[in-house]
Image (cartoon, rainbow, N blue to C red; front, side):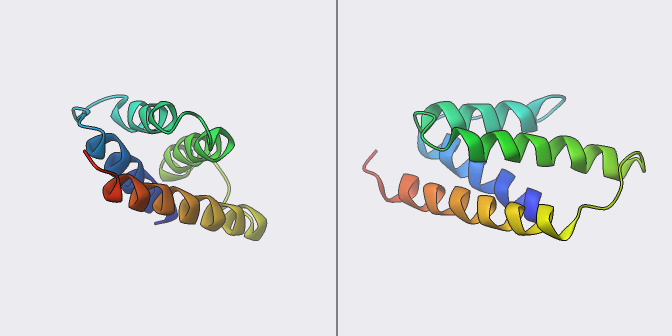
Length: 95
């Protein structure tokens, strides 16, 4: 759920900048990368961790990764909170 919230916030950043990323293979990774670039990479470490969450989510869904640790979950919550705040600011920015 945390990853999905972060991904949706990244989509908001991309769409607020006037871009759209088609659905399909690689769309989630492209969305996160685009949001990172569109924010001037000021939160690059956060977007890098969001990419890591994306890969771990995929591995977890196919039972090839262990459950995330409590430390991982706390970091994910902090990171997603930051991405949501960045998305909020992107929505408030004049077009």
